[in-house]
Length: 567
Image 1 (cartoon, helix red, strand yellow):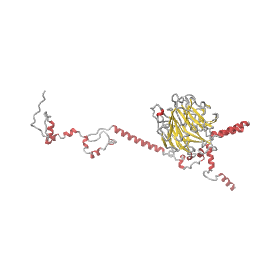
Image 2 (tube, one colour):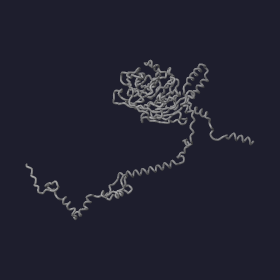
Image 3 (cartoon, rainbow, N blue to C red):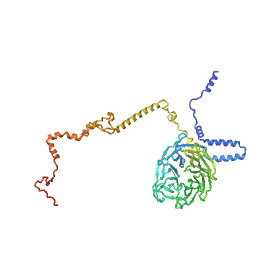
Image 4 (cartoon, rainbow, N blue to C red):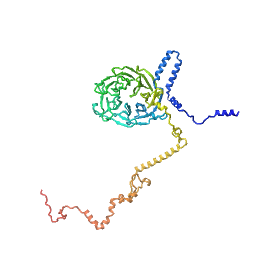
């Protein structure tokens, strides 16, 4: 009986106390489950149920085929990066994908390093403001140098920054009073876009609303290397503002899109007097081209404009678009397009947090992805990029949040490195939830009362000082202030009267009337003979005749009077 009760008691009581240790593999799988997108998980469950209920073999085959196409996309998991407060205008990564830099309309550049983050610590390690109060339009790593980042603010001067956030160069701006744009040393109006040349590691191009595209050499910050003046009809017509630009895949041609819906192409080696190809009203008239990007196949271009259309072009027949897709609308002047590394898909952000993955063959929507956290209808996808080395998609939103989409099987490093890394063990003092609040033990009220008393004392002292400085009475002859109390006589900056009386000679004469001081010597002057000559000289009338003196200073009494002048 006793043995039975002891066994029951042992079964009821835990075998060990404290936190149960979790294996590293279990912890890694748990972090991957937390990073799994809820929308993707729900879609997979629905597909499995649909496939199980299907009785028609043809329907099952089509469903499996669709699932295979979708499984090739790295969109099953996500990593959220926060740090900006306004719309993300550009996302760029170095060639290895270890460092991410984002530009935003909040005027800041934020730097993230995947090797230095863990699932709990995902804040940017550096924040840089290239130009105070100026929004950032573009940020791009140099394709041949992972230490140089091109930054285009909403200003006339592009800048170069290092991967550590150090400013490397600032390029010149032009003279806004010159009419001929070829004679200016730089842009004379705000920049709109910038891009590196894939062919020349020392060259990059910038576009601005001064109707020019300027090609720069990184070794010369005082003046651009070449100038392209963009006109409405190519080489004829009025100048038109340039909204965006880009290079072809190998850098042999320079592309530009205007604010009136036209696109042009120039030979990257020149001459730049007229474009090699120019299409007027490639998009609707008055619709600004927000992005122009080249496919890795070397012949396909993709453009999008504010009219909500995405179009594909062939550089060999640059007259009419190959195909067009409408209905992808987003109200953002820097909305971009991006190709996947193989050139099969096109990324296009849209309103309501939608990211469209389009098939390049017909521009049909292969997958419409709703970015988590963009539940607000005013939140939209502003920029997207697909990194070739990581095989991961990075999406920027109008609320300043960046979502990194990846797949544990298809992606490499990057976001996977952060998820797989175990969080750093924190000290108990690092946990804000364990920090003792002073309000919990009743000290907050006492501190507030003491602060209020101190503020009241300072306020009364300032009022007394102000009243004393405004109502300072004139001193009496003896140097006193009868109309003021003793504690309010002294004003800040006024020397002590006792100190002046003892250390400054003749200081008592300041308060003495000069006339009264002279009258004190009147009786003495009448009795003392030394004062008589001075008084007689002062009271005697002025002489009417003039006397002459010789060279020794003695008067000549025998000199006759001067003759009067004859009338």
